[in-house]
Structure formats: C-alpha cells, structure tokens
Image 1: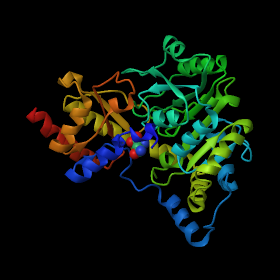
Image 2 (image 1 turned 135 degrees about the horizontal axis):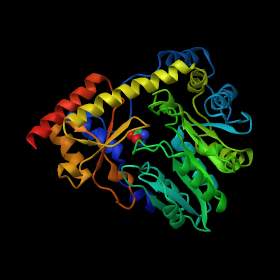
Image 3 (image 1 turned 45 degrees about the vertical axis):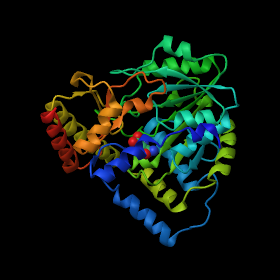
Image 4 (image 1 turned 120 degrees about the vertical axis):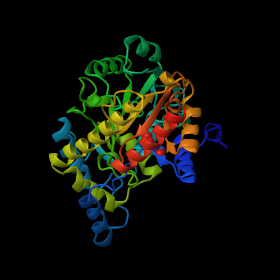
Length: 383
Ligand code: GLN
C-alpha cells in the first residue's frame, strides 16, 4: 500500500462529525450550513434532472457554465477569461487542487504551503511527488512576511498552494501580502494554485482580490473556486478552475483521467446561480455576518477570547487564556462531555506551531448557535 495514504489518519472533519452524531452534540465542527441553499438554484437542478441531459457532459464542462464563470468573474473581480480555453469544471475544488498538483509537479519539486492549511493539501502534495515547504502563520493576524517567504522559497520551488480567504483562520491576506507573494512567485518562476473557494464569503463590506489579477500573475495562476461555498450547497461538489491556456491544457489532462466530468444537472443550476443579482450575494454575506456577530458576542459574554473573523463562516477562539494548552484534548472533551463539536486548529498545522486555537462553524440557525452557547455556558460554569 502507498505509505503516504496508509499512514494517514481519518480527517478531523469526519472524526468530529461522527462523534457529534454518536453523542448528539451540536455540530459546529465540519463546515456546512444549516440552511438548505437557495431554492431557485436547487429547483433548476431538479428540473435539469427530469427534463435535461443526464449522460456525460463535455469533459471541460457545459459551455453555458464556462460562459457563466467568465461573465461572473468579469463582473465581480474584473478578470478577463476566455470560456473556451481558460475555464474548466471539476467535481469539487478538491478534485481541482489534486488535479493541478498532479499536473504541475514533477517529483522532487518543492511546493510552498501556508500553515494552518486545509487538511487535504499535504497528502495530495506528497502523493504528487512534491516536497512541502511551510510558511507558518500565527495568530492573531496570520499574515505573510518577507523573511518567512525567503526561507520557504528556493530555486526548486515549482508550485505555491495558497488559500485566500484562509480556512481555518477566517482571515484575508492584505494587498501588501498579495504583492509580496506575487513578487516571490515571479522571481522563482513558480505557479500559484489559488484555492479561493471562500471568495464570496467575506464580511464588513470587503471585496475579494484574486492573486491572479496581480501584475505578472495572470499567466502563472490557477484560480479555483467552488459552487458548494458560493451557494451553501457543500454536497454538490462542483468546482471551477480558471487558468491561462498553456496551463489549462495540462490541467485538463489530469481532470480527464480523474473524474472526466461533473453531473450536468448541477452544472446547469450553477450556471444559473452565478448569474444571480447582487442582492443574492449581498444577502448571503449579510446573513452570515449576522450569525457571526450573534455567536461572537455570545462567546465573548462567556469569557472566550474571540479572534477576528473577516471571511469564511468560521470563528476561532484562543483557549490559552482559559488555562487550556491542548486544543485536541479540549475539543475531545467538549464534544463528549459538553455536547458541542468544534475543530482543533492544530490539525491544520503540519509542524504543530499553534495548539490553543479552536474553530467553530457559525453558518447555523440561531437556535443551533444558541443551543451551543447554552452548553458552553454550562461548561464554563462547571470549569
Ligand atoms: N471545508 C470544510 C471545513 O473546513 C470541510 C470539508 C470536509 O469535511 N472535508 O469544515
């Protein structure tokens, strides 16, 4: 068996969701919304199942969805994308990331990663033959520095895997961070794989800035997004990949031998959804922001030290001021003894730099958040 995969543990999301089911805990661990997602988008998918095409769609994705992507990213991020040669649809962003790593890495290439990072990154990089080089980000800002990048980049750097907005920290990289990273990519002739699945889930009036739009990055960036995050439909697994034609030709080779296509009915619905007016996107952000504020003030009222959340639907607390030093043990106790599932952020660090941050998902109904706060209050009382 392949040692990279046989040595892996079950993903922390699966472990926590299973524990939550077994114990009847309120699940604020794995990130998925309580809300079922926009009804009109779901209805489009249902109609397409009943009256549309249910055989293989084109390998690169339905033309109407690729066009919808080009139109959407022009409107929201002022990107000029050719739908025929620069847009591809995959079965989720994780497929897009896996495919991009397989397509771009030659064994022995170095890959720059920013920890904390999504738990799929390291095994996928290693399995593709890449050698991970970590830039360690620390609370509360989780920002970049010239020194940290200089240590991670080398003449062997081939790929940079960059997640912005960043899960699990709920932060957004600054304009200065993006310029710095672009400069390093250009100087080292590296390709940036940008996981931007949270691009629409940003708060307090912010607007997402894609790395691809930085000078010199258009030809060396693979931009990846996901309908699951844009429409709160995490089970759909419809990913979108944008890259210059010479990169896309190779990315398409990986996709054609991984999943080949993505369900056509879901593609029809996503094409429709991407064209929704500003009110949908603004409303989605406003709803999440309201939940964030409700949950944050509840946590603060209980004496938790809440870190800023400006993007994604996660909120982190630093448990060190509560006298806790091990987030994994803390989350284990919280789910089994107190009935709330959360995610220990140390699970996202390869080198274990930070061990006292705990992530909660706030994309939940008020009643769910309030039930969690009640249980946390009982825990605080007992502690
Ligand atoms: N993206 C989701 C999160 O961060 C989890 C996805 C998964 O369960 N693999 O919670």
